Image (cartoon, rainbow, N blue to C red):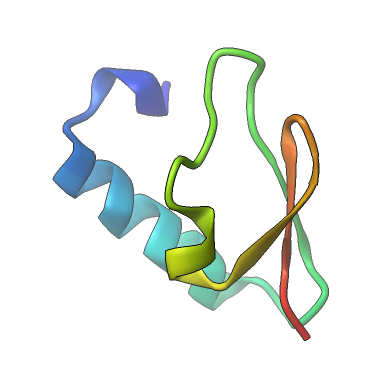
Length: 55
C-alpha cells in the first residue's frame, strides 16, 4: 500500500513504524515495497523484504 504515497508521506509512515518498534524489532514489507533510505530511519536490512530496528 505504501507504494501509492508520496515520498514525504512514506517517510512519515516509516518514521512512525520505527518509533513503534522495540530495539531489534522486525518490519516486514511487501514484495513491491522497499525502504530506499532505510539507514536514515535507523533500520538494518535483514533480507530483501525484512528490516530490523537497530539495537
